[in-house]
Image (tube, rainbow, N blue to C red; front, top):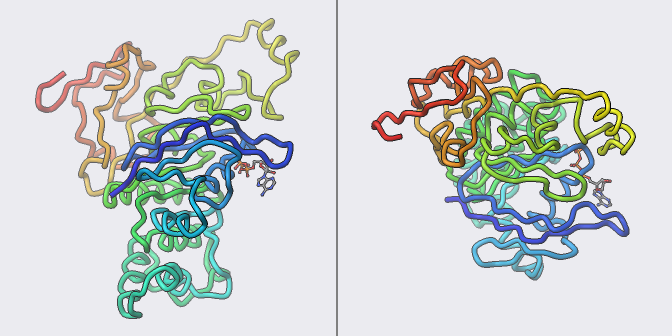
Length: 347
Ligand SMILES: Nc1ncnc2c1ncn2[C@@H]1O[C@H](COP(=O)(O)OP(=O)(O)OP(=O)(O)O)[C@@H](O)[C@H]1O
């Protein structure tokens, strides 16, 4: 399960308003990627373009040898079955109970019997912790429950690619952590390719395998999590560390005078915070795309920030399953470089 999505030179405008241009990157098969960017940079537009709800001005989206923008409506209808989408508010039909909401794609896209539909719906509702709530209407449940119901609905067609539009918006920190665990568990169980748009920096730092950042109408960077978390590139550094100083201002970009004033003041940027361990599946088995912590840095000759990959970092929530982590045992949080030793004795 899980397919690669290759995005090449994608450009989107609404009338004369260019949203982003020449966006190129690949969502690796079966991995979790996060897409970040200041508000209004077109992240939701990007998700809608990926799933074929919006057509790009130019560029390609290659999935299993098919270029989505070139497909007819009929062909697109078929390819869309590869996708599951969790929209911000769950996008549930307000007049249908949760059972019918979750059953909707099965009744719409398959010829399954009602008893087969029932089995799938109850399995997915159980998976997201909503068994017993199936007769409730969306208006009768909390925002977090609506998101989980939206997730159950996104899963019923066994998608190979799952897109999440701000799954954590409006959730308290504990619910955010629980939902993030659910996402990591689902990725491990399904092996599907995940793309998550989020504003939650802790989510961005701990959940994905890869991180991308949209800024000033282009893709500033996309790559492995460790690459971005150790990056000194000013926009990436500022955004991923939620810093005040840097090129991003309230109106997306600071103007030249603001930047000059910062430069003249000789503001020293704070040190990069340690790179946290990745969130692990709750069953203790490895992630779908398991990597040795620190390996990207080591292979690329990058010295990670001091304290990276330590087991006791405050940025890794206590519930994150770190205690079950089967990674290196010899990590010195005070060392300048982190020596990674594999359990099998390899480097
Ligand atoms: N259908 C549409 N027609 C015209 N303009 C649109 C349409 N959809 C989105 N836009 C514009 O595209 C820009 C990007 O919107 P989008 O919602 O994708 O941003 P975002 O990065 O997801 O923002 P946020 O982080 O605040 O959710 C905005 O200026 C928005 O007004």
